Length: 173
Image (cartoon, rainbow, N blue to C red; front, top):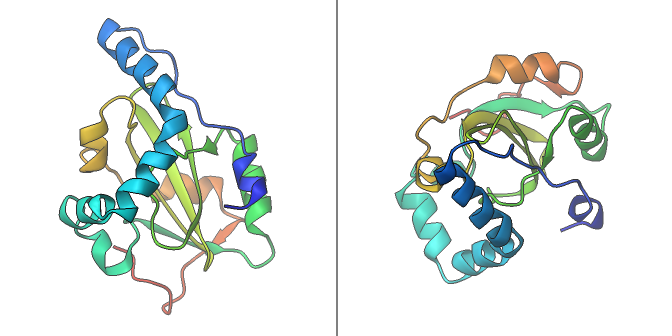
């Protein structure tokens, strides 16, 4: 991972009001620094690949989740787009599975339960969705219950940054 990505501000979730959610919040606060190692180890020994192909089988073909927004406008770099997104309240979402050729994963939380999630790939693709935070409900997050297409909201935010996908890019799932 490039140094500039490691130095991005970390995405944070709002402190929840219920006791049960507060317990989850504190678990994730302690666990989060270890997650990249657990994630990478699980992929290295095959558990991560098994989960991605069994629990979320539609990622198998492209290795990327649904909801292709478009491709990065050639007038901008990935770093410029990420800087813009950071100013819009997004942060590094390293507590996430990695899709094939993913460069960076960013999220903007709405509250403890929901987040906007955006991924940028090496070929310039930008994919995005709205979902439960992993902190709120890890299993629903993993199996993508509540996983929603919010392309119109992302298009409004990223109108000059992302252009429509070409027919040669990977299929929009």
